[in-house]
Image 1 (tube, rainbow, N blue to C red):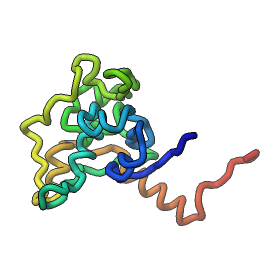
Image 2: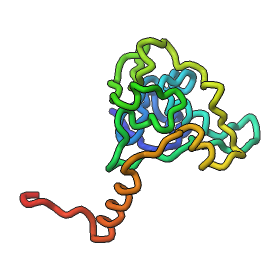
Image 3: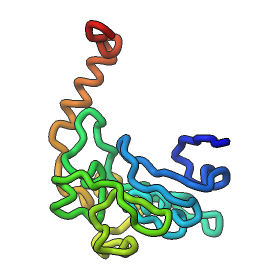
Image 4: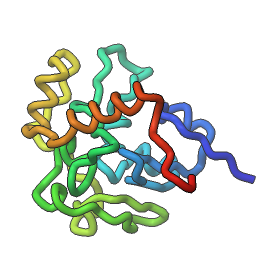
Length: 171
């Protein structure tokens, strides 16, 4: 039998699962055995998600993933993680990466593969500083605005205030 767990607590899920899939903005970005993913993540979002987990061995401030998730009604072109990704390059901003095999029993959706065999170290320009204001860190990593985000959020808010999405004929 199988059980599907959905959540943001990677530590909790790791206690109950043998295989995990990581999603970002409604898309699968990585899948593989739980121990392999926790020891060597292959997608930048997975790495930052794991690095944001609190440590039992040392006290310290929590570090979040800089930036904001995209508006699901107005995803950025290309990889949805590109505005927050420390590895993003031009191709990431135009093409949605396919989920490809990146190792034994491992699949990821990232344009860094197949040229790399593992996720490279974080670029030195990226500093995950828990004391930095999130807006400042977000600007450092993003360096650009998400066109349409505010419009999509306003449209969603208006729709929710009006009682939710209207059903089309035949629904």
